[in-house]
Image (cartoon, rainbow, N blue to C red; front, side, top):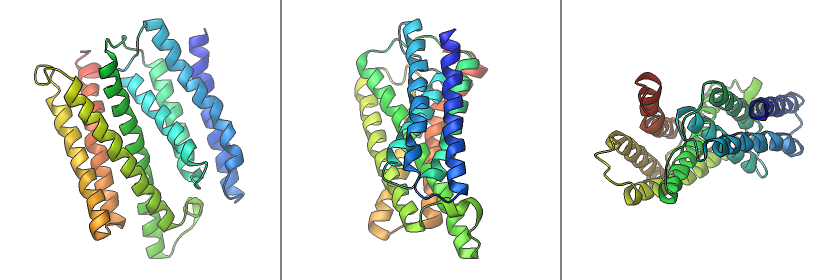
Length: 264
């Protein structure tokens, strides 16, 4: 009974927090730091939902829906932490409902079996999930940056675009997120190479190739930003390309393997 109530309560708490943020944006109340406490119960309940599931399975569940939910949890936590010093209400209005949706998918679409991983492979898995979460935040910021840049060029900044930070600040946030994603993805790749044995026998080549390609795109983008001052549409396109490659690396292959071919 408790296992069923906690995910639903967490999802409702996420939606309440998002609704409160939307109201604050409509009233133009500025930086809604006072609303940060509203999402803390949602994050705590989201974490508890996975903890109870792992306790029941005697191990971590890292299969498709569970991993997707964990990425949503990471996105919610990272955006909330960043909001303590930045104006990110518009971002959190998107992230919190996504986290709620991913959690409900995990709860209602079925749970996998416990993953039998030693601590080294668990470290690799957690780093990979954190890389997905941080790069997903960067992808959302990139989309917002594209809309804002287009609206400024057309001199039509209105509606929800007025809730975004200034263009230069949003761009700075994007590249900070990309830098963090690059560091975490680098660590995930290193731990994968060091700790994963028999890479070819485990049919992980496609994951590795796609993840490395995503890493290369991020490296090129960050170098271009540092050396040539890349920004605007080019930064947006490369950010979304890196995100797409990383999504295909795990979630694309996991979707086919687990949900279509029914292989674990």
